[in-house]
Image (cartoon, rainbow, N blue to C red):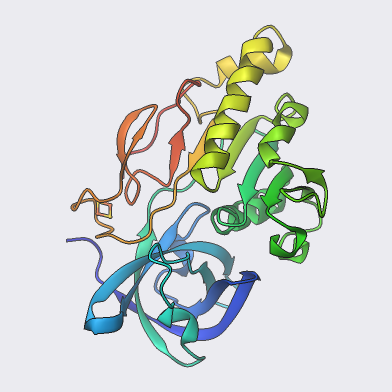
Length: 281
Ligand code: FES
C-alpha cells in the first residue's frame, strides 16, 4: 500500500520565517523525482510512540549537493514539533513524492503567485524553478506584520516580490488578494497558496477580473487555455494521512469534483473558473 519509506539523513534544521522550520535532508533515492507541488511524508514517532506521516512540502532541491529541503507545517493541535528538535545526523524515514506537480502550460511565460506565510512553503520551489526556466514571476505575499514575512533572500532576485501586511508595517496595508486586479491581466497563470481566507479572496478577485476582461487579449488567451492547465490553481495543504489515496482523510471538493490531495493534489482548480484536466496518478 503505497511506496515503502526510505531513509533520509538530516543535514540541518533551518527556518523559512520566524517559527516555520525546514529540514535539509540527504535522500538520494528520491531527489530526481521531486517537482514543484510535491511533498514528502516524514514518518516519525510522536508522543505516545505513534508513528505519524507528516506532510512536508518540498521547498528546495539541490541536485549538485544531493540535498532536499522540506518545510515543517505547523501542527494543527499547536503541539510541540519534535521533528524541529532533531539534530544533524539524525535519520528519518520518508515516503514520496506525495501528490502531483503543479501544472504549468509551456506557453505560460508570466506567472503570478499569491501566498501567505503558511503557503510560502508550497510555492518556493515553484518560483525558483520558473525563474530557472526563463519565466517571469511576480509573488504577492502577505503576513500580519513585516516580521512574519519570509525573507526575500529565499527566492531568486529575478522574482518581483510585492508585500502586503495586515498592520501596514510594510507594503500594502491589507491582503495580497487586494493586489490581484493590478496583476491579473498580466498573468498567464495564477497559483495561490495559503490559508482558506486568502484562497477564497483570490478566487473572488479572479472571478471579478474574468468577468470584466472576456473581450481582452488576455481573456481570449485564457479561454484558449481551456483543456490545458487551469488559469487559477489553489494549493490546498493537509497535515497527516496515509499518503496512498486509501484513507480518504485528505478529500477536497474542487471545481473538478472530489480530489484526494495526497494523490491528485495539492493543486486544485478554483471553483467557478475555467478548469483544465488533471493527470491521474
Ligand atoms: S492521506 Fe489518505 S487518502 Fe490522502
